[in-house]
Length: 192
Image 1 (spheres, rainbow, N blue to C red):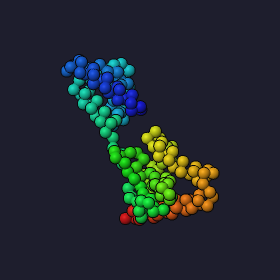
Image 2 (tube, one colour):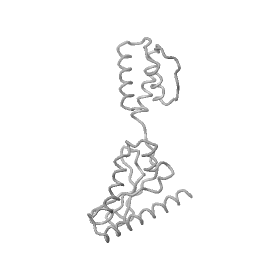
Image 3 (cartoon, rainbow, N blue to C red):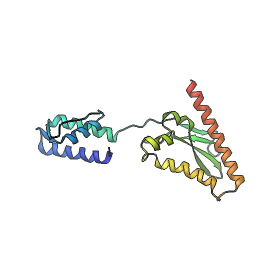
Image 4 (cartoon, rainbow, N blue to C red):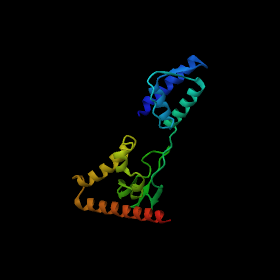
């Protein structure tokens, strides 16, 4: 379901309710089904004709559906980790969470590779809960597209001719060390 289209539908219904006042509101079975689904209840309506629904009940349903569209909270797939050991230390990494929360929170780690440069790696702690690959394949790819691009660009830079083989190898070692440490942390947290 398109969230933008559903929000427009909800606003249109609320406008009709405001104009018609406290009386039964005609609504198509298709719109009613979409509204109930957006409010969080899977339902199939089998009648094809329009129905009249009480204005108060329809308004309450619209408010619930709109809250489910706009005020959805994202649970990070892995905990935040501050710079380990320190921000400007070569090989240091962090797992960040954004404000407001974002679907990609915890999926990747940022690694300091020296000279003010940073690369992005996948966070192994996110693999069980919908890592970046899983989300792009089965989840909301639109929401995490920029995070996926960051990971791809980090690896593409290592393959490009923009850096020497020696420096690319050094950077790859830093990324591998950070990933190994993140995996160790994920295993320790899973055992706890």
